[in-house]
Length: 153
Image (cartoon, rainbow, N blue to C red):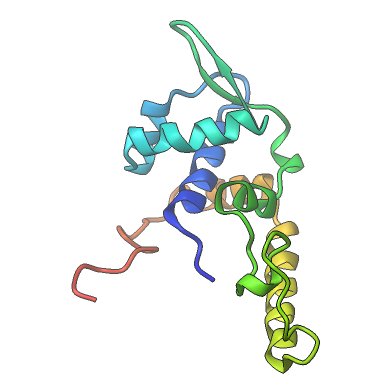
């Protein structure tokens, strides 16, 4: 299982919104601070808005606000909204067709344990936890491309 840019950028955007709880944040601000395409962020924020994770405010002072306190969002719910299932194999997805071999597949148990471990981690980290980590790391240098493969790979 690999988290796509959509899920990673959704988390980054939500952190940006959480940094400014009393004022709106524009997509262009997130784009500049995170070096992410505005068009891509607009697609992601649409998903977040439709799900009620963020509120859209129109007008000159418009932008986006979190709908809830940062402590009330888990990383898991943000990733599931933007990524879909976090299951490592299709046979564990709730919406997949039942597997005829599920009852005798020994590897399925391994994949279920992986899924449970991933869910346990992401469901127990809040947006507030990420915000606090970001604040603690504010003065530290951040290497460019830390989470991305280099072009040479």
